[in-house]
Image (cartoon, rainbow, N blue to C red; front, side, top):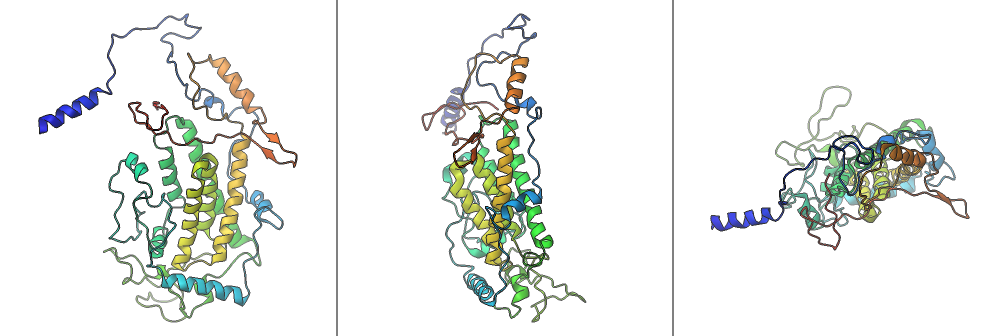
Amino acid sequence: MESIQNTAIAEEESACIPAMHAPTYANDISLAGRPKAAYDIPGIQVEDEAGYWTDGPNPLIHVVAVQDVLTLTGAGGKFEIKPYPTDRATLDAEILELKRMAAHRDDPLSGISDFINTAPPPFGAVYNINHSFPPVTNINQWHTRRGQDVIVATGRELARHFESETPGLSHRHALNILLFKRPDISPIRQARIWMALDIAIYSALIAAWHYKWGMGKDFSYRQRPYEYDRNQNFRVLFDDAVCNDGTFNKCARYLRPIGPVVIGPRPQGLISPGTPRHPAYPSGHSTYSSAASTILKYFFPNEAAELDKLSDNIGEARLWAGVHWRSDHDAGVLLGKAVGQRVREQLEKDCIADADFAQPMAHPDPADVIKARALARRRSDCGCSQAADGSKTCDHDTVPARPNTDDCGNTIDGSVQNFVF
């Protein structure tokens, strides 16, 4: 049996091994003016203009200034953020929502993003031991099994999944999935996408903290739900720490009021040890996740619905935990969209050439031709066109759907995109 298996493996491997030929050398300096041992590989040339992406007059992508965001979120702006509610009826209604969510934390939960359920939970997260991780670590099979595996299935698990998440970790994981087996997207262009994502996350959190601490009356210094309602009408999930054995309902988080450390049930009226020590409005999780999804949707429009679901999951995780109001989440979504739009505007205005996914050429162009072409683009208006209503639309490097082929060039969807990094 072992011999038969080995023979089958050898035959399979041999199908991917190219024929070997004696080497030939092309050291002729006269080859189209190129130097000795000329680079002479026909096919799709990978980002020959990229070395000039920082040249020319058009601005480079940068962290978004808070004042640029406020023009979108202020009164009358596209993403106008209203002052947080202070009337008793609205607050009581939002507390009632948190109370109901707390009572149903262990019920089955629908609408969890595939991006959450295609990777093990982050450090410190709690999940139901009856659920299995993706059974393999081969990302080809993760793609195949998307939507079939369940890691997060309840509100409690969703809340714990994002209890201590590095900001943007789930979006970075999503991007890693989206970029896998995409050598048609050059390494430098992949890096540009990562840069845009991280700038959006960073800019979003700066904007959120400006609202929390620096917007004055009606916007800053908002109470957390527990500060408003200390009658313990709902339980702050994070008041219970995750114990070393992985349980989460028998290990009270240390309470550190002024005075000695208290271990055990929280006395009436004392602070909630699981509530973050910064103002509630807006939710930082909702803000950075909204901005991150906005940017990834720019590059991957085919994944828009799933990315919106991921963003909403992250923001609502904090409601399941009992540390944010619904209005904190709603404001964070708007603020994140505003930040995301400002980053998208930069991407459209930096005049970096759109990705060219399928234009083979016989030989690379000479260096002076490459430079001239790159600088002509960097000095252009990026292919923008203005509509009758004054709105402007610009070309940008949207990434097409992921090719569905293997490394031996076998096609599954009828297209051959067997490139090399």
